[in-house]
Structure formats: structure tokens, C-alpha cells
Amino acid sequence: MYDDQATLEVKDGGRGIAPKDLPRIFAKGFTSTTYHRDSAATGMGLFLTKKAADSLFISIDVISEPGAGTTMTLRFPKRNDFVNITSM
Picture (cartoon, rainbow, N blue to C red):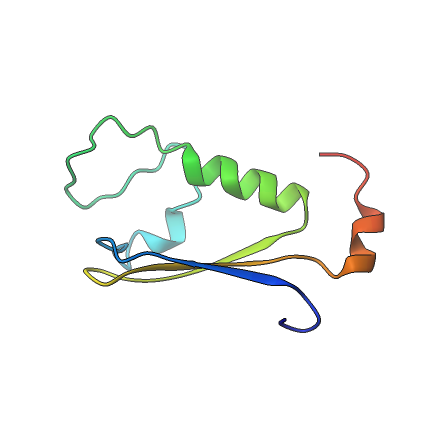
């Protein structure tokens, strides 16, 4: 719990995200500036994730190190804050 909030931390051991890309990972259509084989990426996954999270008052923090992986921490609103959510 962080500040009475439930948190979910998701870690991977992948290639990580370049520091210059971190501020833009949730932008619509953004794909990494680093060369990668999956050139068919649309850049919509994290954009849609952030859009849904914002609607539910879930914050997402990202820490990443190239070559060492990425950690995403989701912080859910306090239980009583859900009363204020009326629609997505």
C-alpha cells in the first residue's frame, strides 16, 4: 500500500525503454525510436492503457533502464474515491 492506496508493480527483463522515449510512451501512435524487429507496432497499446487508467483514476509510473527492463507501477485510488467515478 502506498499512501493507503493499493499498488500493482509489473516488471519485465526486456530491452527497456530509452530515456529520451520515456516521456512519450503514452502518446498516441508513438513507437520506440530504438531499432526493433516488430516494425508493425501501431503505438496504440500504452496510449489506450493510459486512457483507460485515467478514466478509472489509476496512475501509472514507469521506471526503465535500457538493457535491464521496465517496471510499471499502477496506483489505484483509495476505496472511497471510487464513489466519484460515474462513467468511463
